[in-house]
Length: 141
Length: 250
Image (cartoon, rainbow over all chains, first blue to last red; front, side, top):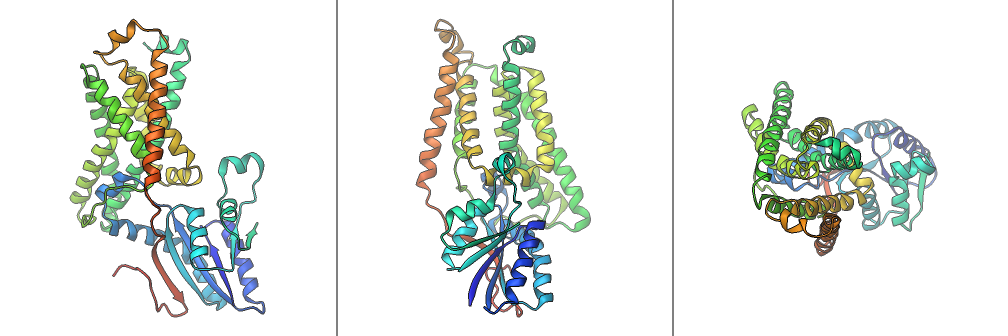
């Protein structure tokens, strides 16, 4: 059983990462697949002053579920069983921490595959995740 | 007045500073507006957002007007500079210290608008003090600062969050920028200005640099004291068979 973490963000790159995981699921090794979306934390004292933690959590949950919906539909259609999670925090940091704490075997994630200046300007969650982890991380372009 | 500023290039520097301030301090307005309107019925939600945004803009205009009048009074630039210093330190903290336990999102339009307007008043205060400081009394710059902040209030929230997530260094630079403005502001106070007049010309830069460095040091120290919290999971489940949901709301 390979424990696989698939972080998605609603972009076409995540779609392709899912294609790849669906391919893996057809292979011989059974997968323990976890679909995850990270919602960026509202690190604003002001928002927290006027809106309750419950409401902020509910907001993150709704937004996260909306992102996960199409991926879940595709996994359900393919008959692949999986678990899903909505996390809140810094994107790369949360993915890496979750992978470590839950002892995943590998991470599969989409990447925009930009390089050079664009990479520098846009940053990359995937690069940041790789830097934080020792387990194999498959980047799907 | 700004003709003078234009000549030494300081005008464009102020423009850049004001845009940076608007981005750093304006992002949470939109988040609060969206959150306050969450529980409203769908047909009232857009109305709540519209009135909330209009209220935010009106409040900001009123506040900047008062701020400019007040900053001309003795000692108030010192107070403003200290406030700005604190706002810079606060900006650099990873986890907010306050939390609104038990304050639920209002379910009526009026309640939502009330929440938005009160929140706006508090949030705009940060922005207004900083803009007033960076503009240094130039009305053209003040107007520009307010105009730039409006689209950020309306559409900017997710973009600002994303930017800060990818480039945490922005927050540090932003904190230092607020310290810089605070340092410059303090020496122009009506009471202190004559004292500094006798001293060499570049002194306000020394003061500004001290402000930036001060925010950087205090901000990083305080941030380091906060231990990282547990990973926050707001929802989860298993498919097929949504049996063990984690932490979901009833």
